[in-house]
Image (cartoon, rainbow, N blue to C red):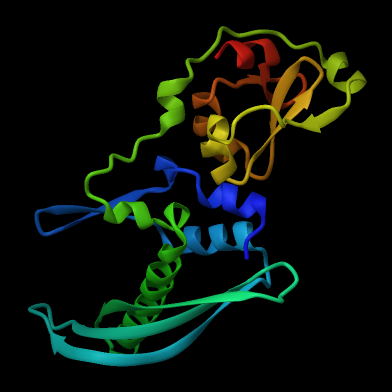
Length: 236
């Protein structure tokens, strides 16, 4: 059903930088945000290779709180289908989600509750595909720490001649084990070999700088790239 690259990414540990937390009563709950889960599905399965249908969307309750706000709860059942690249095979999952809308007007409360229920159902349905969709968050015995932060120490600053990048071809790193840079792959980044260095390429690199630095990469202002000497990678 899934190709080797998809299976490899699905097997990665969940990057702790993606995990959010909120309090419910006296309990701290860990979760993934809705946009993050949908973005991850687009990256792993591909745009157009997965879709979802709202099987049902039902109002569960309605009441007023002490501030005279309307509280409306919804239940959503979502069906998700994931296709292979050729769309010759597919797998289907289904789960339920709940949402609560709180607002002064009934319209806003209905909108908030319905949207939250659908998003919750999408997240719960996608978690059946593994850690990248937050399934491991339900295992209370696991500690979700960024493994790369512990595994790699940050090296001393090293100047990289800009000419070196212009002369040497670039190729994707093949000889490192998948778990070496799992946190970066999870963020949609790619590790490339350029001359005597490994470099990080991808979108929105600046916003992901903390995860990149945690893997031992340094910023070079001349080339505007994150780099790491290959001999350092071999010694790590």
